[in-house]
Image (cartoon, rainbow, N blue to C red; front, side, top):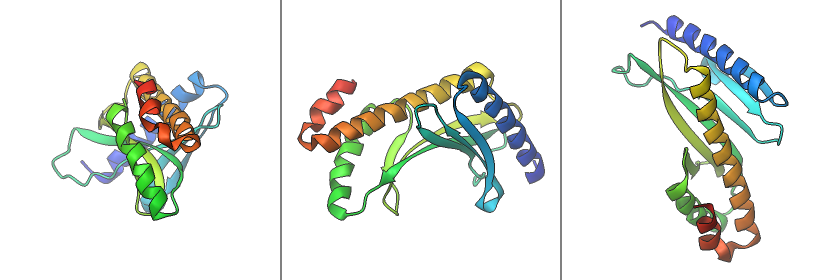
Length: 167
């Protein structure tokens, strides 16, 4: 399959996904843009000011001919000191154990992220209901993370209680 075909299909899929989101999240802001390397990104800011993006990951595996990988990413701020990073990793590890959708991590620049990767057919878009369910579970996971993180920042000695309240 050639690169132009895949990019055209991804563009079409993002048009559909944008339409689905706008129909179901009326007060949300949704935009598409091209980022470094020519990748199209779908940006979503919900009515309650939670933002995330979707991007098709470049196919680094020659044996993937039927699927492509759609990545949801939620960025939640930065960790600036090594001490904060170590304390934060304790929270992230416990949260990852119960997270229904995605992996929380701190990247090399200290940014806190939730990433969720979904395999999608190269030939057809996810249907509306499936796409919206996947998006909703990711959104709810990010919202829960944000609330739990804020509770942890206010009471770091209550980590076990905060996590057990989520289960």
